[in-house]
Image (cartoon, rainbow, N blue to C red):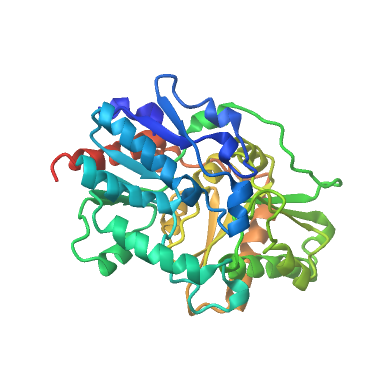
Amino acid sequence: MLPYLKDNNWNAEIVAVRLDRLEKPVIDKKLLDTIPNDIKVHFVGAFNFSWTRRIGLGSLSIRSFFHYYIFLNRLLKIHDFDLIFFSTTSFHLLALGRIIKRKFKVPYVLDIQDPWRSDFYLDKPKSERPPKFFLNYHLDKFLEAFSVSKADGIISVSIDYLNTFDLRYKGVTKNQMVIPFSATSLDYDSKLSSQLKKKEGGALNIVYVGRGGHDLGFAINCFFEAIKKMESNSVLTLKQFVLSFIGTSYAPNGEGIQTIKPIADKIGLNSIVIEQTDRVGYFEAIENIQNADLLFIPGSTDSGYTASKIYPYILANKPMIACFHENSSVVEILSKCSNTNVVKFNSKSTKEHIINELYLELEYIIQNINDVNWKHNDIAMKQYMAPEMTRKIAEIFDATKII
């Protein structure tokens, strides 16, 4: 957004947590360099994780909540602002919108990038639930109702999230819009040294960069079974594949739990599947994607899931296979891109059917990988690029002046 806000008659100041208060952060200095020079960035503190961990509090949003509150009070006493925009998955901080609005009469807009209060895991076994699930669930339930119900605008990557808010909270703002994650081709002008290790002997290098999780298990399991089927049908041997899954955990580096490698181990693909749980920087992620022969994007069994990395995948101009719930917004986006093959599933889909569909897509790509132009459709992508997305976000901002 930042390079394009002025074109839409908005200026921005950023408030962020100091880097020394982040726990095992992945610092992407090249990404920091893309922030326009005229954008003012303020840094706030946070309680030190080294001692908050002792009482079971590691969340950055909880550790920094008090510091954000004090700084925003000081800032708004000195300067007049038209709007506070929360664009973060540190959800506890969103509650500051209502608190600050009550005191300073400044409207606030929320950017919902992931489910906040998620009911997805309520009927799942304990082994598949995130740590401290019920404690976090009830805190999220309270804070979501507190924050969302009084927001002056909401943008979201998924219509499902907005529909959920409409059902949960009477009188929730009508100033809403679905705005998926966007991308800019400018990011592909820079190169970094990728850490991705290619296998020798011309193995097909299949790459996925993004989070893991049990909700992706169905799509990943089917894809692995399709790989096994290729060997059974003598299309390729397993030695001719290498599958790399990078940045699959949100946990601090070195503490992530693998959720993809165990699936490979059960199916018998442990020798060709690599899972790196540590997060990587944005530009390193792009470089890993560009070094792939084939990209694979697994979708969640949660129909509202939208993959944040979808546009960098498309812009890489590589053959791509995606396996998503038919109601995900990703399906509509990818259907407009000529370099993508989408396998869709729903609650009634059989595993055998999806495996066969993935097998056919793999077979086609392998047979045509050097003969087909895998370049994305520039016209189709234009509506999803950063300038257009910023214009739509500015419409939401503008509407808060009327409310």
